[in-house]
Image 1 (cartoon, rainbow, N blue to C red):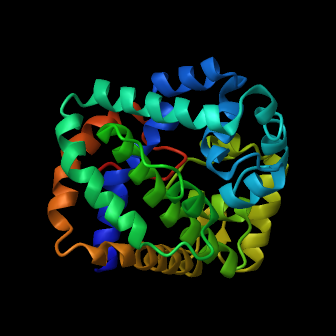
Image 2 (cartoon, rainbow, N blue to C red):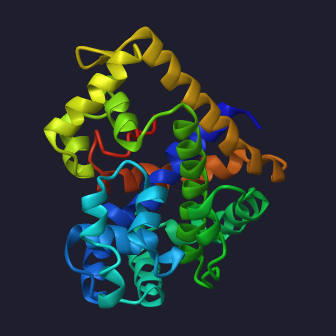
Amino acid sequence: MDATFARDMWKALEPLHAVTYFAEECRTANKDVGLKGFWMGYFGSRGAPLGRASAGTVQATFFGFHPARVRRAVPDAWEFASPESILVARSEAAARALRRTFPGIEDVAVDAAPLLQEVVMAADASGRPLFAANRDLPLPENPVEALWQATTSLREHRGDGHVALLTAEGLSGLEANVLACAMGIVPPERLRESRGWSPEEWDEASEALARRGLVAEAEATEAGRALKAHIEQRTDELAAAPYTVLADPRPLYESLVPASKALATEMPFPNPIGLPRLA
């Protein structure tokens, strides 16, 4: 399986997964289960598969967030709602959002969810804590919930691999954010504010990247673009491996595209994820 297919699958899977951040059903579910505010909802919901994780664990695995932003939400989140109750709430809410946004999702899920789960179980969890935590959750009996859980597991598999590559290149979470913005992928103000960094901290990271020759005057240099391209290529290559379990994964991708395009209406573009629109 080639890297191009893995990138196509990311573009198709991410909107299905990302309702958990953007859809009203999911924000309301976080509030109803007891989590306080958007960021406690975000860290609590996404981090719940890890159990009662410490702030340090969440900061390390999520990557790119200011430590203070994480520590305002975790571990306090677990005093307001147990990880077990959050997991039920997030799964049910995501399924409601999928059904509202794409009424044909039930039919898609019946066929696609088992295939995606095959890919999940074929994926290597070594060095991938968020993926491993999601993979080990009981698979919901409801096909739409199972579809969302499988997309989430594969999304975190890709993300864990991406974080490993960023750290291997000596990039901190903040520096990775700055480089992405210097590439024009995300507006700097949006990413800086969403990840909780101050203008001064952002400028310091920009200066550090400039000393490495990766950024100049808020734009990526040729060396910076080459490094980013290398990281993205390797991310795609690592994410592609588990799809070899399917004899022909292309029909799976094609079955997800209509739902993905519909669900993209729940997301802003550009977005902090750096996800482009599916062509």
